[in-house]
Length: 255
Image (cartoon, rainbow, N blue to C red; front, side, top):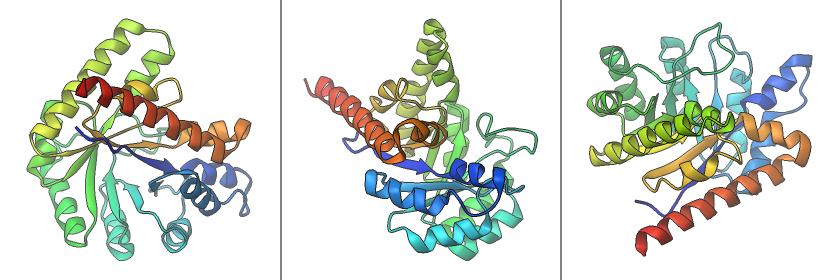
């Protein structure tokens, strides 16, 4: 159980909008600075193999421009490992990646990729990065993540968020229960627990109320909401909802 709940803001889709037209606007570095001023605890950027949003230059500029930690999301490839080791981000989250997907679709299979992934954890950890695995809320995946030496995992909560938004309450309740179980088990076996993917204003409360979770990473929704109410306002609103849900959960636990 932790009272602190960190917010990581993913700026990938600022770059997506920029790349749709070309040029330099909007700039993900400017978005990262705005996010930091609005209350983000870290910035997240996914450097994909196909460079469909964040570029190598964006990564360099982000590392130079922001004073809060940067988490680099990356696939487990030699190219990305070389980039991460060269630039030394504060944290690295290993994610699955397929060229045909629009965005990350589900968690990494650490069980099957055990031997391959361990090298990434060892090499990045030796460089000083906090390495996490992006996984489904599954005990076998948690155990595999611990066995390769990853200090943290990020639980994929997208299926829960999608079910809740669609009004499938029974399914959402079942999915939330699996997230609660996974986070409790992860802490029990010594992992730091993060969560992300698909989180909105309407879905953040129940996730933030899980007191074992230390960090939420949110991107696409916040960038989309920025069109209507501004990035600063969107982040502050999300931060407030997170903090309210965590405070209420801790109040109930203490009582």
